[in-house]
Picture 1: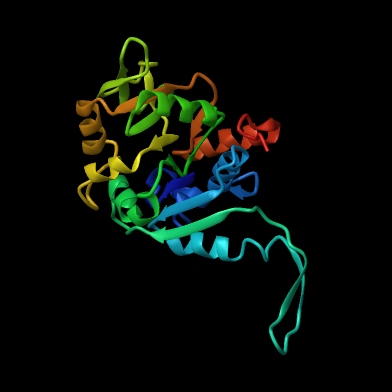
Picture 2: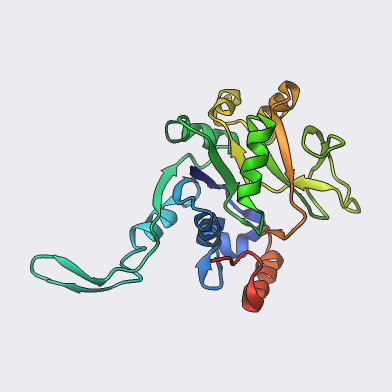
Length: 256
């Protein structure tokens, strides 16, 4: 199963870091946060990634082009340019890096990757959020719901729009603005999607979390998986510092 990573936004709330690199490449414990996310999915056997880049996508391209050589010993013949890898080190991943446009919205980025996602069920997540969500259970819940998309609902106080769920907490009934004092559930990403969902995205200006999700709500095709465990996004310098401290203490998401 492919995993699509939304990695093209400007990350303006973390401008201390994102003036020089895209937010998914901001490091936690010496590795890009996107690497941590990919390691997590790989632990569950999902190793085919599609990176939906945009802002400073060249930074992401360079990282993965140099991924093997930056970690492995080698001998190089400077005359011929031939390289012998003495002990190739790296992850057994397949990574597709796409430029989905600097100004594209989340839905537009997904739609631009259609040719890579249209053949089978796929996972989708943001390139700046970490969790210890049970991905096997998430996928099982999605299949049972016969949905076009299943999102992971998490608890996070503060600045996000809250979800309104059905009584059994398996169906998404709508969305509402979230008060700062509201401890309700929010969309934490970690989606499972069917290709049929792609037909609900109009173009580059489409925000995935708006019209497409609302259309799925109306069709009864958007479901939820409630995750009561760890989840943390990296929207600010303070969030980065929280993640760094958690990594140093034994990160909840480090299952590899």
